Length: 330
Image 1 (cartoon, rainbow, N blue to C red):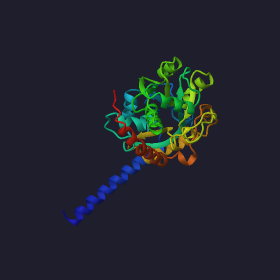
Image 2: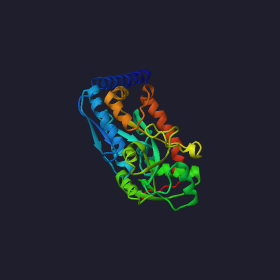
Image 3: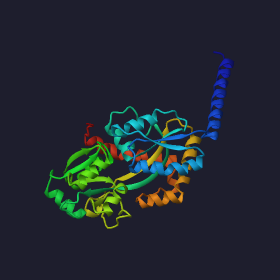
Image 4: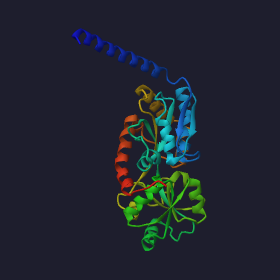
């Protein structure tokens, strides 16, 4: 090929790339022009679903188009996540997930995608703690009594889990590894069944998302025993952390985030991140999340870059533990 022909081809390639960039830029500038669907890979009613629905109205006001939540549960959240990954990268399909869907599930289920490399991060959302709770008839009343009881009754206590590789499952494994205790796991299909089992004294313990159980705590239907955060949980300041009862450096955050399909144009991702930040400034959203004991990220944390870095750090921390535990999907 002559130098002139090579130069002409190179010029043509550059021109096409520039034209595509202009088209993408124009599309991003006009975005959105129609309804946006937010996939939640869990059944309706859970904390992640509540948060997605809470954000939908203020995001509609910011973006000028309807934001509709679609629940796509199944296979430990992997069906909904897979659907989001396979959607067109145009900003009209998003996913709001949590630790279970975007950390635990990918290490346990035989999926063909990776939660970090096959999604475009938009923004981290509110965070809460996991908390170890007991049935009302459990013969302990605080964290230290729980630890003593577990050590004197190895393999006798039962722990409810909601799906293999879920936050509840990994929290239980993690706590046992840190404290040298053992329980027998009892799988349930969702949060509602395990709550019913706890209140009916059919299972001893559960490590669940704290805000979802707050009404049960205040009504005395289950016993809050140990919070799995670095500091005590604001709605129940009397409940100690795992570290306070002797399990040093033991904490697991139950965080939530928003992602778009990989390849979504950066200007669209930036516009979505801005809409999330503005929605979290809405007084109604702030009030409701505070009532649930959820913590809002700071403004500088609500960026795609911050979510990308945090998500990767969580994968790096938890996947070795999950895979080392040899958890099998049943």
